[in-house]
Amino acid sequence: MAAIIDRTWIDRKLDNGFDREDLEAILRATPAEAEELFSAARRVRDEIFGRKAFIRAVIEFANTCRCSCIYCGMRTENADAVRFTLEPDEIVAIARRALDNGIRTFFLQAAESEEYNADWLTSVIGRISSMGMMVLLCVGVHRPEDLDMWYEAGARKFILKHETADAALFAEMKPGFTLSDRIEWLRILKEHRYEIGSGPLLGLPGQTVESLVDDLILLKELDVEMSSVSVFLPAKGTPLEGYPVGDVDLALRFIAAMRLYLKDTLIPATSTFERLMEGGQLRCFDAGANVITVNMTPPRLRDDYELYSDRFYVGLDHARKTIRDAGLQETTEAELLEL
Ligand code: SF4
Image (cartoon, protein in one colour):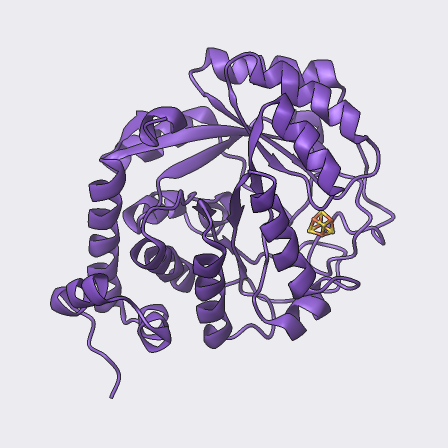
């Protein structure tokens, strides 16, 4: 018989550990059980980090891409996509603006672009890091020697989403790539001293709840410092254009599962939740999240960074209000982690 999830069950599992069956029960929880899970996830978060959350700023600085991920509007086959690479001075000026607004973590994100080289990015990282900002990278797969240059320049964290732990689905979604290479690359990032982040895209066609359990187990095995989930939203002009969006309620239970199972990772309330549901990011905080990312890509370009169509752009006022509404106090990443 399926487990009945209540506080006693959750406390017992928190003490003794969650197995595969428990994780599946969490993902399949009823609405009433989900409320118990969210409440426990908040307790775990607050015990580890305090009733606090922090804001980081992202800039999407290049959108040319050599890859063909079939869910993404920036895939190389999309000839209609407008391609851009920002100038370093503009990136640094935006980082300065973030800092002036009290944001101390700057997130440099790009598609798998060949429009810039490792030295170019080293210089950008160095300029931002020297302002006293924590630099986080999400720039895809590069040469291992580049990782050391970027680390020396000040980058300390690297996000590489694994998207799905189902190897066959991964190969279908990301033609030309394998899940095992992706996992290997995450291990290489660790070897090169980075704190790493990863997570799935929830709602991919053909994805199962069992494979979402595998996602959780993979995150644990990788010993990630940052874990996240985004909800699938179709992008126009891609092979998945006509597919339905992912299940937000399942994604919220996935957040609670990450908090209860992984416990001390940073978990963002991603914009896809707000795009699908007003107050969706607040629900993420209520399910155990503790980070929100403000989008600082210049408005003239951000629609061209089309991970999915009609994106929701998180502004600073929205981020601050969401943290307040969650009953949390805004802090910086360094303070939250007691660095
Ligand atoms: S998901 Fe990333 S790597 Fe894949 S096509 Fe889009 S930008 Fe490129």
